[in-house]
Length: 560
Ligand code: NOJ
Image (cartoon, rainbow, N blue to C red; front, side, top):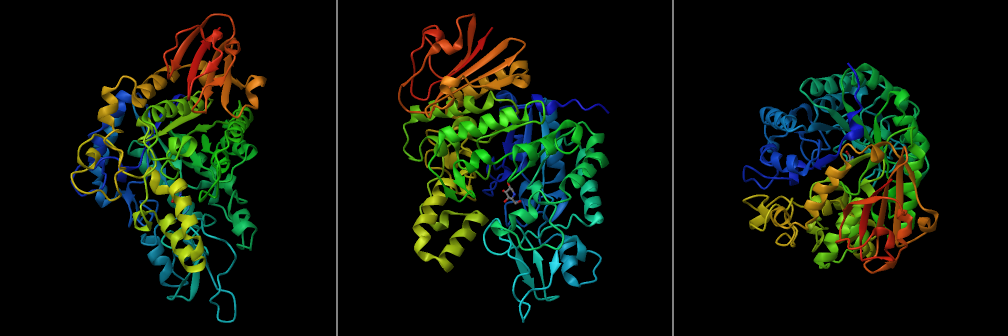
């Protein structure tokens, strides 16, 4: 088996199945819904899909709590449907990356149901069970804080012990120090690879190794469960044991990863992961996801530059602006005013794509981003469906009710349901997503922002994405070239200008982050021969003669 490193040439489309397309009129997206949109994906030009979890699940966290790793969630269809979808993707030259959620299972998984039963159950050590502290043993065993708020420990009456859950109490953490757990993971990875899967997005993979003894930590225990002592050993074992036998890719969701650590995770000779999602670009604009910060373009640019330079020839980046946990990028980076000017919305959605996708790495576009979808408008707390948002609101109500307005405002900006509202296919009822009222509200702007409209508008964000994907495809300068920024624009808070270079061939990208004209000296494009590969305005003069960039203007130039 030869590894082809196809991930370096992939353009990946993320599907959040619950919100993509409902085929059977229950208000929930499903696999046959995806099948009905395969031609849409083919036309877009992407060559891989990352499918968020579609396994059996009680849906406490919309499928990120798995109760059976080898079967499909009832609401989504059957394994037969899944096979048909996978064949349909492959026929169109699109690979399939499944979500691998193995830091935790659902509390309804057979392993956990057994584990709970008694202290000597064979599955007991599949999870972390500990005695409580204090006289009555009812205090949590350590000070770790759950990613969704509150302690990571839940007391269980059956055996009088606590179990560990870094996420919701319905997502108990697997104990990777138990070799049987690692074998189970290897087997289920093999199961899906044998069914034709081409890779895995490894959910919160940086949390799988905990410091032995589970001691108290700083910052709610982050230092005790992130990049733990055996993380590299476990990943290499998984790679050597199974992943390396298939021409597949892996991308690790790597909360808290630094450039130095990412090199350890993704360096080819390390045999661990192919690439990781870093979160520094998110951290530049929000604390812990839930506390938005004022957008800082300069800081964001510096994060990009640091990762581009840091991983060059040492690892591999993942390029993204959105996913099912992040707000919509035009709302986050440009304006969160739901009545934003439609022309500016289109221009800025295109500009943001150019800012990110000509960097080195594997690009990911999240469903709806390609038509410039925006954040949902939450009317009140009942509009939130996400387990994390609901937990935050519950904790605020209990311990700090005076913060409710602040929390609602923060969730409006960065809450996870923003990106989970149903995909806007048309101006028909429920945005063409479903015949019945969907599980989460449709964004009120679906009559203007939808796929049908975008297909008929030559100037749409969608048509721009198609061009962008085509321009990027097979371009060696974009894939392998160096990254640099002309020094005069490096500190600009308004413009983002960068160059990619390989064997004296150059790609130069210029973006205006602001909704007004900004002075710009086109001579950075050089005086030699050049060609505009992509732009979101009509370019009427030689780019070298430009003296300003228009509101949200972006240009991609090929220069010799
Ligand atoms: C990261 C996933 O992207 C998120 O949606 C989920 O809640 C957590 N991991 C827990 O699985």
